[in-house]
Image (cartoon, rainbow, N blue to C red; front, side, top):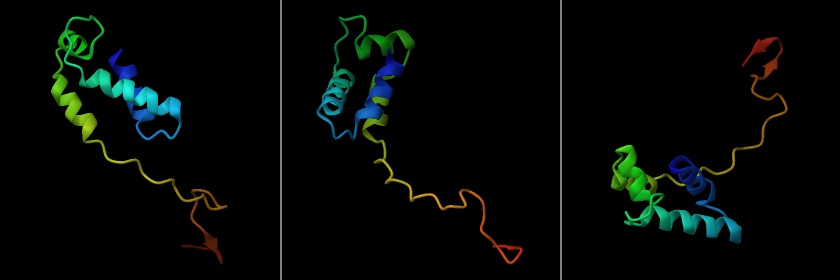
Length: 88
Protein backbone atom coordinates (compact mmCIF):
# COMPACT_ATOMS: atom_id res chain seq x y z
CA UNK A 1 0.00 0.00 0.00
CA UNK A 2 2.78 2.42 0.95
CA UNK A 3 4.82 1.62 -2.15
CA UNK A 4 1.77 2.15 -4.36
CA UNK A 5 0.97 5.48 -2.68
CA UNK A 6 4.52 6.79 -3.08
CA UNK A 7 4.53 5.72 -6.74
CA UNK A 8 1.22 7.43 -7.37
CA UNK A 9 2.39 10.59 -5.58
CA UNK A 10 5.54 10.73 -7.72
CA UNK A 11 3.69 9.94 -10.95
CA UNK A 12 1.05 12.60 -10.47
CA UNK A 13 2.82 15.40 -8.62
CA UNK A 14 3.26 17.48 -11.79
CA UNK A 15 0.29 16.21 -13.73
CA UNK A 16 -1.51 18.55 -16.09
CA UNK A 17 -4.65 16.42 -16.34
CA UNK A 18 -7.64 16.80 -14.03
CA UNK A 19 -7.48 13.12 -13.15
CA UNK A 20 -3.76 13.27 -12.33
CA UNK A 21 -4.24 16.39 -10.22
CA UNK A 22 -7.12 14.74 -8.34
CA UNK A 23 -5.04 11.63 -7.68
CA UNK A 24 -2.13 13.75 -6.46
CA UNK A 25 -4.42 15.66 -4.06
CA UNK A 26 -5.80 12.37 -2.71
CA UNK A 27 -2.27 11.01 -2.23
CA UNK A 28 -1.11 14.23 -0.53
CA UNK A 29 -4.10 14.16 1.83
CA UNK A 30 -3.42 10.51 2.68
CA UNK A 31 0.21 11.28 3.54
CA UNK A 32 -0.79 14.38 5.56
CA UNK A 33 -3.41 12.58 7.65
CA UNK A 34 -2.57 11.79 11.27
CA UNK A 35 -5.41 9.25 11.52
CA UNK A 36 -4.48 6.05 13.36
CA UNK A 37 -8.00 4.57 13.53
CA UNK A 38 -8.03 3.06 10.05
CA UNK A 39 -5.84 0.02 9.30
CA UNK A 40 -4.78 1.42 5.92
CA UNK A 41 -4.08 4.97 7.04
CA UNK A 42 -0.58 6.28 6.41
CA UNK A 43 0.17 6.53 10.13
CA UNK A 44 -1.08 2.96 10.83
CA UNK A 45 0.99 1.52 8.00
CA UNK A 46 4.10 3.39 9.18
CA UNK A 47 3.51 2.10 12.70
CA UNK A 48 3.22 -1.49 11.45
CA UNK A 49 6.42 -1.13 9.40
CA UNK A 50 8.24 0.74 12.18
CA UNK A 51 8.78 3.76 9.90
CA UNK A 52 8.88 7.41 10.91
CA UNK A 53 5.86 8.97 9.15
CA UNK A 54 7.17 12.53 9.57
CA UNK A 55 10.51 11.57 8.01
CA UNK A 56 8.70 10.20 4.94
CA UNK A 57 6.52 13.31 4.72
CA UNK A 58 9.60 15.56 4.85
CA UNK A 59 11.24 13.51 2.12
CA UNK A 60 8.22 13.81 -0.14
CA UNK A 61 8.03 17.58 0.43
CA UNK A 62 11.73 18.02 -0.34
CA UNK A 63 11.74 16.20 -3.68
CA UNK A 64 13.52 18.18 -6.38
CA UNK A 65 11.42 19.49 -9.24
CA UNK A 66 11.27 17.24 -12.30
CA UNK A 67 13.98 17.70 -14.87
CA UNK A 68 13.07 19.26 -18.17
CA UNK A 69 12.63 16.99 -21.14
CA UNK A 70 15.94 15.61 -22.41
CA UNK A 71 17.28 17.02 -25.67
CA UNK A 72 16.39 15.04 -28.77
CA UNK A 73 18.72 12.16 -29.51
CA UNK A 74 21.30 12.67 -32.21
CA UNK A 75 21.07 10.46 -35.29
CA UNK A 76 24.20 8.64 -34.10
CA UNK A 77 22.48 7.75 -30.84
CA UNK A 78 24.72 7.21 -27.83
CA UNK A 79 27.86 6.63 -29.89
CA UNK A 80 30.55 9.23 -30.34
CA UNK A 81 30.79 10.95 -33.66
CA UNK A 82 33.55 9.53 -35.85
CA UNK A 83 35.06 11.70 -38.59
CA UNK A 84 38.09 11.00 -40.74
CA UNK A 85 38.70 7.77 -38.91
CA UNK A 86 39.53 9.68 -35.70
CA UNK A 87 37.23 9.52 -32.71
CA UNK A 88 36.18 12.83 -31.26
